[in-house]
Image (cartoon, rainbow, N blue to C red; front, side, top):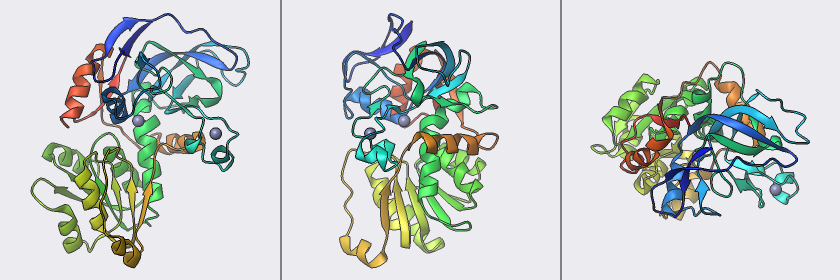
Length: 334
Ligand SMILES: [Zn+2]
Ligand SMILES: [Zn+2]
């Protein structure tokens, strides 16, 4: 099987042939139809998020048909369309799992970080952790929903904003452009912030009520002046400065939801949190149950803006992503 392999961090991926994986009990083999490229994959490649093994196949937004089932996989059949997402495995027994927070499982295995992921023609997965793809979702449109979509959906829900409230969405990339759609569907007024006029044009098409180009305007000042602050800000940007601006956009009692992976510190005045009762919380792809909710909510409503590529385009995609020049979400068709 052909796969894009990361052999050492900070080096380009190479397309190579790998032996077909052998199935153990509880495992299925999936023929990959679509594999989304997430910003997290770039962090793994660059070593910010070091992979547990090398070489490794990256990719955790994987959709494909079940090709073969191992023993003890009774719930699945050959030909089922399923997704493999960020959490390849969670134990179901640790304190976090028992509290219903399997995304905090201390024994979790992450797809494309701890075990081989989906930049490949085939992937092996745990039958217990594959996600059925609802009817009506094409593989290339379902793939981005498995991570970017679920993250955007959870982030919008985690704002605790109410219909009619203003929500600021910093960053109009893979997560941001979906968060705009979810926020509009849930009845919020949306202000989208980016450094790119092209991305802001996309945000407007998706229904953003206001757009701000942070290259020419200080978004937090504009938002406080024009709207009086937002009830919630979702930061999907990977720029440190965007986090600071997002925090200062939020009005009293509001919420900052952090989803963009940034390796750095956010400096904010403690008294500003005490007096304003602002909540800062992290969000992400969530549990299998939350992912199922996100997928069923999305069918027929959410349209990921994607561009498809062959497997060997991955290094060019990473290059564009690093420069912030990737306009549409990249999906590999292996
Ligand atoms: Zn991801
Ligand atoms: Zn666990």
